[in-house]
Length: 153
Image (cartoon, rainbow, N blue to C red; front, side, top):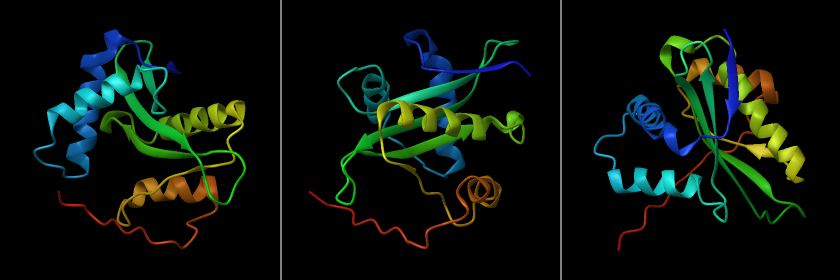
C-alpha cells in the first residue's frame, strides 16, 4: 500500500468530511452540529488557529483513509507547550495496516520540530483495538481518569 501522510488541502473537504462523519459514528455521536464541522474545517485551514490536521492518502486510489486532529497548548508543568491529539480515525477497511501508528508518528514529528514537550491523548476505555496500539507506543496509560463538566448557558 502506498500511503502518504500530509496536511489536508481545501479540495479534500468532501473526503475529509466523510472520514469525520465516520469518526463521529464510531463514537456514536448523533445529531452533531454541522456548523461545528464547518468551523473545524475553517480552523484547520487558518494559519493563526492552533488546530492542526494530517490526513492519510492512499496514492493508488487518491482517497483519504485516515485523519488526525491535534493542537499545542500551554502547560502548567512544562516550559514548552504540550500537544493534545484530539481525534484519530482510520477507515475500517484500512485498519491493522499501521496507519494509526503513522498518523501518530506524524504528530510526534511535528511536535519535535515545533519544540513541544509531549503528545498526549485519550480514548474510550472499551476501545480495545486502539488501546493495544497506544499501549505499545506509550507503555500504557498514566492512570488518570478524565472527567468533563458540561456548562449550560
